[in-house]
Length: 427
Image (cartoon, rainbow, N blue to C red; front, top):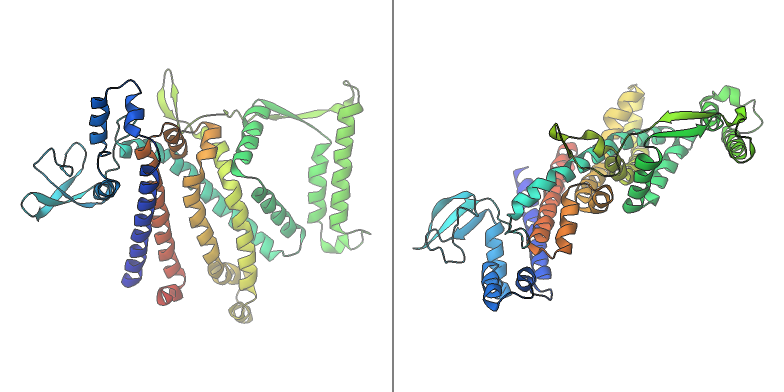
């Protein structure tokens, strides 16, 4: 197990190095002069030169890359005495301690990674990202947790009721969730939850049987539905369509005072269009505002929920056909034990892979959702930094996201090794 973990950690470090190299050269070889942009067009050449020196922009790109690696590495070589040195260990910048001397003027330090300072605010990039990362992390963790719980339940129901009404309903919901991109779903959810349904919403009483009647037909026992001339599906479709048509006709043609226009007033959501994890009140000050999370979490969980439903269904159906399931049933084990202790555990590998990928993707791809809902998080911070050409913040954000990807994949590999020992052997 130790060699398995060391190999995975080594792969993760190689991935991080590749991401750092690509991001660094991508931003540092781009046209433009960040020092001139920061100083302004009317700044003197001396001011621009000093800014270039401060940002290490006066050095060749290769030396800048080595200095950047030295800054972000936990183990780094610094000069602890000479303040004008490019690798001077400044206690204001670095947090760590010296391990041992390397030569006469240099020492090896163990420190926190240093992601430079923002070009715009001159604030430590680590502090900037630490302020906004919790907001994005809360959204991502809540979204993937709800998607995992609900998606597993829906997938299990679909697999155990293959080719029935419930199976088709779960597949329809999952296909509908995968059909819309995140930014489009965010706009629709925001419009419904924070505008259309914020105060109250009135629905025609004719729409209530349109929703309930097909469900009641689906719940009828098979012995009773055999007496019907049509199948459950036809009866449910025709009845729902009939009540919807009645509701539309009443809304269009019935007099305003007619009893047929009776509506049911549902309470509003009371949710705001925009908001962050913390809100500010004149009297209370800053406080945790949980309701602001509802709409963004719903938006972010829709797509991973849809993927988890389909993966759980297909994987569980495949496992249920294998020999060891037939053996477990032949031994007389209860169906609950067969499904949840034997089949489901062996069917979780692709689901865990999808969950790990989606959790990391939600951290990286929440930018559109955060932008629509005005959520203070990593996505919105990086969007602002790109607009202002604040390269250290953008580079730091990308590196943090890459590190999260690596850590999550390492955690998933550990879970794989625990669930299926064959993974450790094959690796």
